[in-house]
Length: 636
Image (cartoon, rainbow, N blue to C red; front, side, top):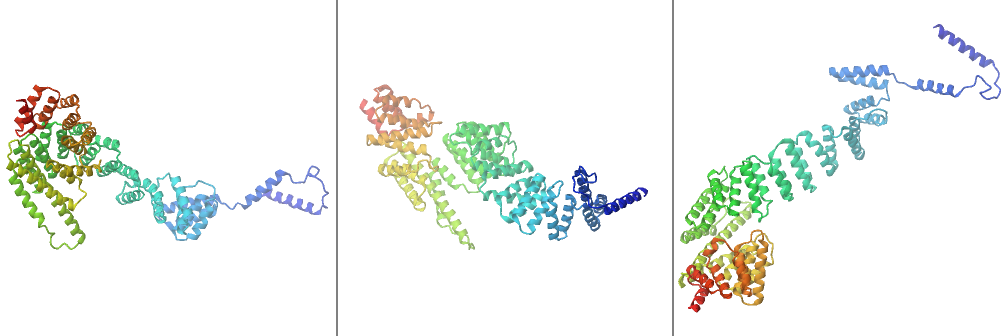
């Protein structure tokens, strides 16, 4: 107190002296000891500034502590009072300003919240994701989309994309403004945090499909599987890889599969589709690894394993594995039926016709009578024509009088059912034609057939032609039917019609509906065999070369026989013999045409002994051979 009193006394005296003195003379501060220095000015400014500082940090700190305490107690109203008091005591504190602004926003006082937040955003202090989020919400509330977007992005950057609530709120904003590309990015961050919840996953999937982001769709399924372990997601990913022909990635996934679930089977099946038709060896290698190493012994894998073994000539193993399929089934009768069809094919190839019929009957039984077409064809292959035609006639009668079930009023459903019925009818007509052709060929290839039987064969071919013509009326785009007709016309010696149809088919070269090596060889061989003009023969030879080239990995010995016959027609006898000697299959030992060709080539080369033996073999297999009779008759 004494110091203060003394200070005021001195201050009063100084003021009094200043008041009594006369005006100072004009002089600089160097000559006036009472003049203000630069340091004095700075000190005065500091004092003035200090007097303008209206902060009370002690009160602010105490109120801050009390506000948190009230919130812990659940006394929200008191907490808000203390938050407001803390801010009033420290009005330029960024943190406190935003806390109050948040509470004003929560109370619905948007204007006050906006005013305070816009002021606080420029205050010093740490900027947080929560502060930016409040700014975004405020601008969203007043409909200023650009500012809202800007602050949402700042908030997410600050939170490093880990704030799930913020991501969801931003996604709702993006939904509202229809920014699909940005929404995809946000969902990509949000989905892992919600464990790929189905509704959000479906929304992201639809967005990617809408934006044609096919690769991103595949990656989405992959991430979902990795996060959830859901095998169905992995199947969808593999399906996507298959559609995009990303075969290396697909096979890499399939190579890791060791389970026996339906999803595992589906992935193995999809992997098989990545192998080309002529890459059967590698497909079989893959299947053997799945079966023997990865121990996947399901009916489906066994079916494919047996089928590919049959393709590459491993018949004994094929019969074992295919036989296990229809016995095991695993609730998949369709695969059991397919296995029986394959076993029937093996049996017929081995000339075990009774076994072939038995397997065909089992296939029909597994399909609950739904495999009658194959059964009828099998009866035909077994020479049981009366049984085949009886079955086919009953089926034809059924489809000829087919009508939709009563009570179906939906025209679209009616149309669909009628289309299916028409397709089934056409398939049956084709089956009937095939059986007729099988019978005709059997008669024609039998060298002991009399003229009456040969007439019956011609009638069978004519009847088959009527079936195919009926099919073309219903569907003129059916190339397979045209191919069958072209071959049938050639066998009936209606060459101009046959070759005209072959020329039509060649315009569709490469169409997957046709076996092009087979078509090229058949047409080429026909031109060479008829040998009408050198130009036609040359054309036929080139077509045969095309067939061999198309089947280069596994050249058919039948095509080699065609090539040799083409060389013979061209007068290149040495080359023709060299090609014929490449044929090693035992099945050719029972083919009279092979021996006819070999006999003609030996005869052209002057190898009379070899030619005689060849033609003798021809007559043994086919007593009606004109070529053999002519050569051996001349020799005598």
